[in-house]
Image (cartoon, rainbow, N blue to C red; front, side, top):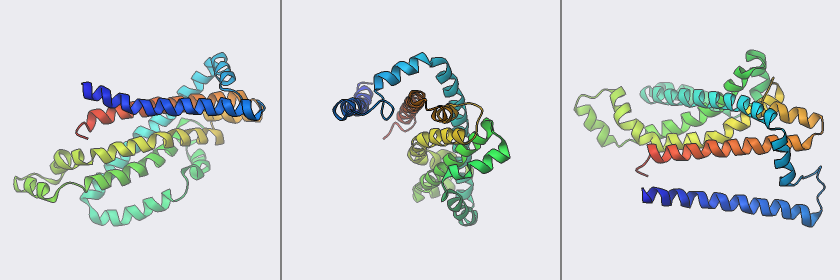
Amino acid sequence: MVAQRKLMGSSIAPAVLCVVVLLVVWEGAILLLGIPPFVLPSLDAIVRHAFSDTGRLVAALLSTLGEALGGYALGSLLGLLLAVVLLLAPPLERIVMPLAVAVNAVPTVAYAPLFLIWFGLGAASKVALVALAVGFTMLVNALHGLKQADAAAVNLMRSFGAGQLKIVWRLRLPVAMPSVVTALRVSVPRSMIVAIVGEMLGAYAGLGRMIYESTQQVDLLSVWAAVLVASLASMVFYGVLVWIDQKLVWWR
C-alpha cells in the first residue's frame, strides 16, 4: 500500500509541475508581451466565464463524453476481438491488416462527411468515428501483445489438452495486458479529439458544436472555456485509466 502511494505521488508530481509551469508561462506571456484578450485571454477570465456558463458547458460536455466513451468502448472491444480472430487465423491476418492500415492511413476525421451522411448528425456518427480511430489502435497493440506469449508455455498448455481459446484466455490475454492498456491510454486523447472535430463538422450538441458556434459569433471566451473543459475531462479520463493500469497490470 505504501509503495502504491509513493508510485501515485511520483506520477502526480510531474503533472502538477507541468500545469504550474504552463500557468506561469501563459500569464507571464500576457503581461510581458501585452497580448490583447481577443488573441489570448487570461486564465482568470476563462475560468470566470466557464463558471458563468456552467449549464451550457455541462450539457455540451455530457454529450461529447457520451459519444467519446461510447465509441471508445465499442472500438476497444471490436479491436480486441478482431486481434484474437486474426491471431487464431493467420491467413486472415495477411488479408485484413493491409486493409486496416490503408483505412487508417487517412486521418479519421476525413471520413466525417461520409459518416454524417450514413449515420446522421446525431451521436451515432461520432460514436462510429471514435470507434474507427480507437479500434485500429487497439487492434495493432493487442495483436502484438497476444503474440508475445512464450512458445514453451503455449506448447505446455497444449500438451495438457488446452484448446486455442483456452490458451488465449489463460495465457495470451494476461501477457497482452500491458499492450492492451497502452492502447487504451493512447486512445483517450484520440477519442476526445475525434468526437469534438466530428461535432464541429455536424452535430446537434456537444463541445465541438459549442466551439463552432462560438467561433462564428466571435465569442472567444466561450471557445476557450469549452477547450478548458474538454482538456480537464480528458485528464480525468486518463487518470482513471492509469488507476486501472495499476490494478490490472500490477506486476509491472
